[in-house]
Image (tube, rainbow, N blue to C red):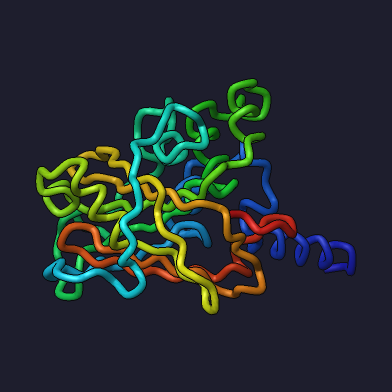
Amino acid sequence: MNHLALFAALASAVLSAADVWEVKPFQDWTDKDLRKVVNNSPWARQTLAVLGNATSNPPGTNAQPTVSDASSNDTSVTSAGRGAGGTEPMGGTPRDFGRGPEAVQPSGIPVIIRWHSALPLRQAQMRGKYGKEAATSPEAQRFLAQDPAIYVVGVAGLGGSIVSAGAGDQAKQNIAQKTTLRVKGKDPLRPIAVDFVPNGSAVDVLIGFPRAMPIKLEDQEVELVSQIGSATVRCRFRLKEMVVRGKREL
């Protein structure tokens, strides 16, 4: 193999190993690429929700925020969390674990935590809706051009009986009171909106947080801590990984 051919082979190997959100226009993502972005990426982490008695708030969650259902604005909790056509949740429930959404393992229930307000997740949403035409669709371009007014974090994979137990709006209030986004050395962020989106036999819980306190790269990590019905969810995200072309995306 001559030097030129060797260089080409090495360049190809490096490109194939790079993250799809860095090297491919989102309209060219394959279905496999989409699954990676929404189920196993820096903005979508698989973890386990631990079942137990919801008798106390996680530390630092004593405030009683006012929770409002999301509006039809594209920066709302509902719109930011839904997928193709704006009617179904984006991505799959954690059946990727090889089990149904309510299959209880000894250590808990598998869930996926997603940053729906992050650009790669919003691009995946538009790619799923418009296909390759997402690059030229005026609706897709308007959606992607918006700067989301809030952080939207979703918990996918919990059954409706766990999420709300028939309590409806009261369940949303309970989740808001027992949920925080935490950055070391800063006051925790508390939700300003909670919404439920049916997703097969499961319910996606979409939680909106204010952007009043910027989350910066130098903060290193951000952690979601939430009590959802009888399930406790904790998940940390490394901020240095949540970067696309040099820009932090949350």
